[in-house]
Image (cartoon, rainbow, N blue to C red; front, side):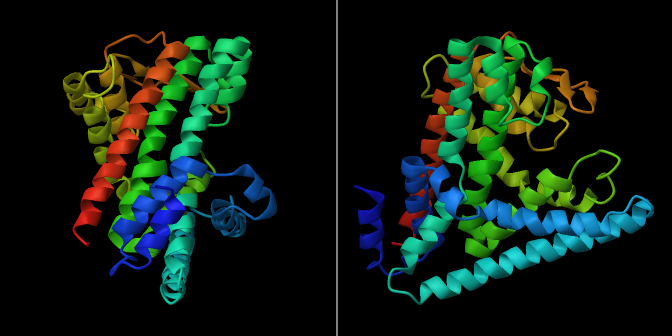
Length: 336
């Protein structure tokens, strides 16, 4: 059944504006149409709209001559203002759409735009294709779009590892976490989460410029992703039971034992589950624009990844994505 038909049917269902039902439609829309580039050539992307005031406030408030505590307070106030404003916009939009005849379709579309399931798959698949058809330079150019590290210092295996790591980590904060917060708190929760996540990506760094100012944004992002990251690891582990060549038991074992080795309190969970499921070793030393970061290895398998390992990770990701949809369906059944 096309998502548009499902939207029309659910508009006549009591409680159809329940987040669980709308999430089902949004996940289907994301899978079918993803994040169309043509649309954002005409309209500003919602994340860009969130990022603009974050950047403006940072330039105004984060002056080098101020003390660390002063910058931390200013960063905390700016982050609170951005997150609060985003939640308020979500609350207002939900109220407006709830009063419209086909408002549910609009809300489902908004949620779909803020999910990154299909776009993540496309970006990571592009890395596998580039490595296989264009070699190392093609792989470096493709992976540049999904990682923050310097791809020019990566060999073929490093490019493949970076792609698989990004797939696992972004499954958590690009798909599971937005779905989780929408399911829990509706549009206000989803908008607040996207504001937190965008703030962390822009100012939540440990560099001299951002360490104090972005401290609260980084810690808030850690808190917002705490449960979704662990749910993501479990979904990847469960997906391994249905993926050729993957092992669910090993995925869960490595997740429990190695997740703490990651510098992030959250990213290690889906990454370790992916490494265990496919018997890989991820992580390792990473080269960023500011220098080399000594990162622990996660997993005990092969570290010399190639294009076919990216494709194996993508198959596992698709199954985990489907399980996410089924979980939302299970919740939705309780409101019908």
